[in-house]
Length: 518
Ligand code: SF4
Ligand code: SF3
Image (cartoon, rainbow, N blue to C red; front, side, top):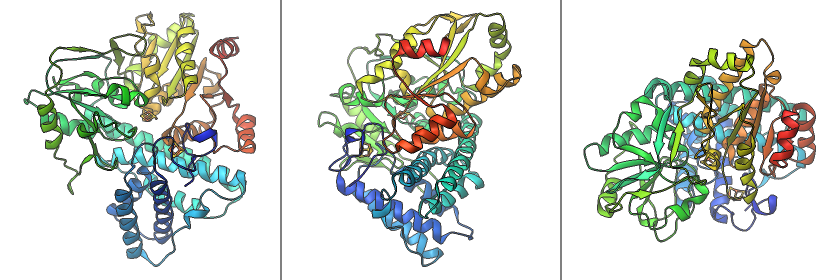
């Protein structure tokens, strides 16, 4: 096996014996074979009109290879067979030899990997939009185009152009998902979320898929079961069409890497709708369920019928059987806080734009930071907690994705009636952050890079890769990136990023804050 797609890759170079994430070598090799088959399918589809089933398969195949999504060799084999049969229906074309995926000139491998990993991330977003009935021909078409590009030889210049185009398409994909989520569930509104788990039967829902959460909320209505969000599902509390369910009670635990500790012996059922699933411990494996493209050998999987409907009865029965805690169970954030606030997506923030603009003009707000991205296990990630704690009182912190659990239970106070810490949502809600930044730039009649705004990002998996490529395609400069730089970025490619975009690895909160605020 060879895999270097995530931030925790072995020795900062690549997992070769077994994944640090728990991915077994057979599964890693099958995922490469699946990728080769997807390239074959994209080649066979060139110049032809594809059907929805094939388009969905492309997204699911890419999504299944994202870090911490699918560890089940049997499911990957099924996907390979489906991809090959879809390909056969389009023509007789060869797959890409998976052995070539990670080999060759280091700079070309680096650029090709950036494209492939970006495509994997975008596939997750496109899939969440698709299950809500939102598809876009340009986005869908780009999966085919991008996979063909992955399977072909290209020069450095051609790769850089592909990456820019990809970043632009991924912005459209995030816009599509934003449209899907907000038109289905309404615009998020500021919402306080409790971390106390009430006594009685409960289900914890993890991952990013709001459609799965909605179906589960409907199926648990009136059954005496409470629902708690976990990880990236936290922003769900802010959507009017989800928050209206009184049994959507609160948030359970922190970010994905703490799940083995937090789920140990849990007297409730847990549903994983996307990443980040870790290999479960015996103490709770019997109560963890997977759905959509998530999979793990031995865990019960909830499939969808041809209309996307799911029957969560096994999850519901497990929650009733376990019965929950007998007394309210107090959980806290990592800094000891018990109330989290979310719901500051673009509609809310732009709704108070005048107030924000005035506060900047009269000096009440000196600087904005976007501190967001993935969380992970590396100890250096406490940088983000310290950074946020040390930001001056006249600055605002926008955040999104699961990295926020490092600091989202802190009370940072307010500026002019607005909280200093604004949770914009999931990683895909980077779209909201981009819209806010563009609106501020327009209001101040300046370039985005001239705004008093600094992006301090944390990455872990491939959705962070597609978002980063979008930010670069938008020309956003001087991004701080950590906790370590990707293994798939070669020294020469890094130099291009530094020279053209001023990308900086994080150092210490003190030094970086000093450099930013001068
Ligand atoms: Fe290693 Fe990350 Fe790949 Fe897992 S996903 S095998 S931890 S590089
Ligand atoms: Fe987190 Fe896995 Fe990336 Fe959507 S849940 S941000 S790491």
